[in-house]
Amino acid sequence: MAKTRARAHLDLKNEVETKEGEKAFGSRRNKSTAPAEPEQVDLNKNLQAQKKEINTPSKANTGSVFSVEQGEKTLGTVIGYSYLDPNRIKTWAYKDRTLAELEWDKESLEEFIADVEEAGFTTPIVVRPIEGASENDEFLYEEIAGFKRHYVAKKLNLPIPAEIRKLTDAEAFRLQKSENTERTEPSFWSRAISWSQLDESFGATQRERAKIAGASESQFSTALRLVRRMPEEIVKSLRLYTFGYNALIALLQFIDQDDDNTKRQERIDRIIENSDRFDARPEKAESIIRGIAADFQKEKSGAKPANAAEVVTTKKGGKVFSIKRKKNGATIDLHQIGMEFADLNEIRDMLLKHLKSKGVPISD
Image (cartoon, rainbow, N blue to C red; front, side, top):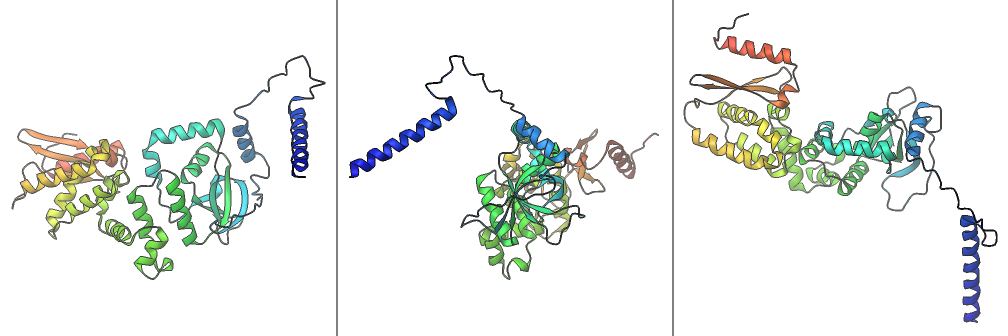
């Protein structure tokens, strides 16, 4: 009996395979002697279809949502999937990635843009509806996972595939952390900024808030101290998102080593004076800081060292140049990140004003 069942199953399997084969390749008895024409494949079909979705009336830009079956372990409630206009999506307030950090890695970003231009998006982002939002509002959704894809969709003016979920803030944090483990981790500084925004609505104690953020209590406490104690001048003059965890700790330890405000400002200026070194070798930030600290300690005395630099700031707070006095003159170092906060005319005016304030004769 068992052999009969097995033979019947095998015969049925062969019959199905034969029929499927005939569908794909044609019946053996009627096989054409002429070779089939090769199928023309348009590699840009996906991209063209996506562009059409956002520029013409369609299901995509009317926000039609296609429901799906939800898995048991899925965070929140999945409403469905849709192609969305990226300009109707805003970044979540507690996002642990920043635009500056994304644009800093230009090579990786340009490579990803090229991939999307060729093949479209292969993975949907995760968004949640904004409570109370209507079609008359600028934004209808918040991006929870997919910061880079959302950025590129806006840049290329493409509709973006999105999984729409109902999520609490706590669930959104857990989803964000899960997303980060599968992709490039955001910098510790960016995560610290995100964590510092958590208030008591995320938990009555620091331990509870750390759990929501997916961090250890020690990590969470260190992050809060970094954000609260880091001088605004440093934040605006250095790309702290390029610093590793240990470099950030070393930086704050150097700045906060005593309560003397005058010396503290000198240490801040000394760090900013070396901002271009940090830009050139961010992976060496910790050793650069240790070297600066050692040199500063050697020079430490009652008087200001003769070769200490004067640092000049823009209106927005970025330190744009440092002036070092020498025996026969002075050298002026322009800092790259500070120049991003000011145009050339502002830099020229700042320099002239500073020199005049020091009694340097300037001819018109």
